[in-house]
Each structure stands twice: as C-alpha cells, then as structure tokens.
Image (cartoon, rainbow, N blue to C red; front, side):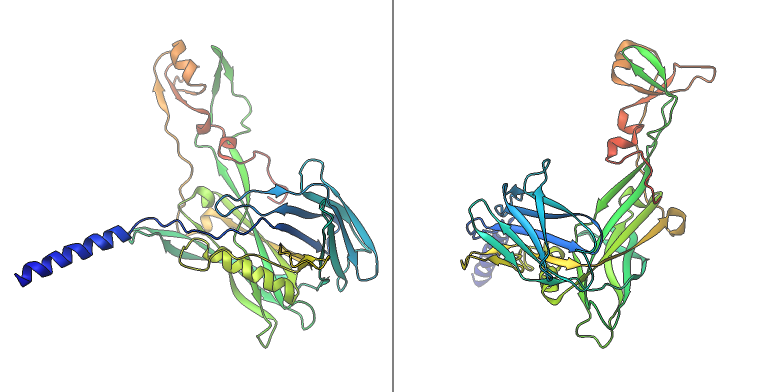
Length: 384
C-alpha cells in the first residue's frame, strides 16, 4: 500500500510539472503613453536629425510620430540652429550643420516645443574628442543552438581602443555589415508572353546587401588606469547564412560619450544583450537627459547627446576562412518541350540544346536567377 501511495504521488508531481511547462507571455504594466525624443550632434558636417514620437505598447512596437514641433539646438556660445520637419517622414526634424557651429569641446542643448505647448529641454552635452578606431579583427569561433548536436562555425568580430589622456573615456559602437552574394544560376533566355528574349546583360547575378546590426555596444575606461580597451566584442556571423560565402565587410563606427550619455547607452546595451531571455533584465524605460521645462514631473524617454565619430572597415574573403559557408541554392526543373503551359510557369531558362535554343531546358523561378529577389542591390558599393 505505501508503495502504491508513493507511485500516485509521483504521477501527480509529474502532471503538475508538465502543466507548468507552458509558453509564458509576460504581463507588462503599461503606463500612459509618453513622449520619446532622440537626437545627436556630431562633428561631421551634414544633415542632423531629431526624432519626436510617442511610445508604443509593449509587444506592438511602432514609430508614432509627433508632427508640428518646433525643434532647435543651442550651443554654449548662444548660437542656435532651427530644424525643419522632413516632408517625407513625419516626426523627423532635420538641419544642415557644419563649422563653426560644430566643434570638439563645444556643448549643446536640445529644445523641442510640442503642439501641446509643452517645452522639452535636454541638459548640455559636450562633444568630446574620440580616438581613431585602433583595429578591427575577427577570430573563427564555434557556436551552437539549443540542440547540443547543432555546432556552427563562424567568425566573432572585435575591436581595440587606444584612447587619449584627454577627451572621451566612454564609447559606443555601431556595426554596419555589407556582403556580396550571387544568384545560383544565370539565365540564357527570358520567356515573356510566348516569346524568347535573349538574356544579353548579366546584371542580376551579383548583388550586395547592407544591414545595420541592431545590437548596442558600449564600454568605458573610467575605472581603468589607461584609456585602452582590448578585444571589445562586437557581433558574430555564422556559417548558417550565405553572408560569408563570397566577400563580407564590416564598418565599425566609434562614438565618444560623456558620462551622462554613456549611462543611457550602457542601459540600452544591457537591454539589447538580454532581450532574448525572458528571465534576464526586462526592457528598460530608456530615460535619458531630456525633461519637461515647464516644471512638470512628466516622464520623457530618449536622449540627446554630442559625439565625435571615428570609423574603420574590415573585409573578410571567403578563402581566408577554414570553413565554407553555404551559398544560396535553388532547384531547377528539366523541361522537354515548348508547350505554352510550361512557358507560362517558367520565365527564366537555360538551354540544354548545344546547337541553339532548346528544348530541352532547365527552368526555374525568378529568385533562382535574379539576386535582387533576395533583398540586395546589383549596384556595387563605392568602397568595394
């Protein structure tokens, strides 16, 4: 009898545990919508932007622009620059800025007058000098998924910083990746409305695609004896994508930050690093150095900061790696006649007839022959 009782208890415990293993959608206590203001002043002449929007609900992220604001930036010498709203994108305000308004060592403050007549002001932020990007490099590294049998090869990028005695001791980095890829096949003929059109120009077999890495990277040397950082970890590229199959490039932009700006970006970096795990740090409120100047305790999200930018680019050739990354693949069908039904379905063709146009043919859909179908552009970048 005791054995049966223990067996029943064990079964009940297993049922309870099974009931506990269910997808968990966290309940987020949503506050009222709040205004979000983001902007940056750099040392580089050109168009500068400030965005003004309202926060969106958790789980339903979207850009909710605030139109009709009066946006300006004031420097520590009393000079002011007014921004105008971009006529193509609501909530984006722009101004062309150059010297002498821009300069290392100067401080800047943002002011936004909203249609509600609320005035939002940032603390002054100083544009600190930024050392050049010392080096960008990578090591081959194994990684894996949730299945222990999944072992991937790839490359892990790093960068080093050798800072000055004066200037910034806080940094953030933006990584922008560009890679070359090719369509699996090149067509000889394109069939259109029952006619064979020779595929004369091969302009869609090679493409280039660019992507800004969404992970936030930030680090500080404030607690170090020297203003140097070694092996600052950037992003990882796996052989499970075709990005390393031909040529890959990473542009690393390095930004100088004041202590106040670094606090904001460090919080965002921690959030982006842990966003994939439910039980790690939950998304933060991302509150920076902007406040309601009318004396209201209203919460304002976002940050305005000043920075000098340095950059460095690295290239990775496929034959430099000890592994091969898989390229794009595509299956073609063999066609043995010229029936209308076949040519209504297959527009891109390769002739298997050595003396001229087929039949027989190899035929496939456009994404087997046109690399632009996979998100890239067939115009080679200037830096390539």
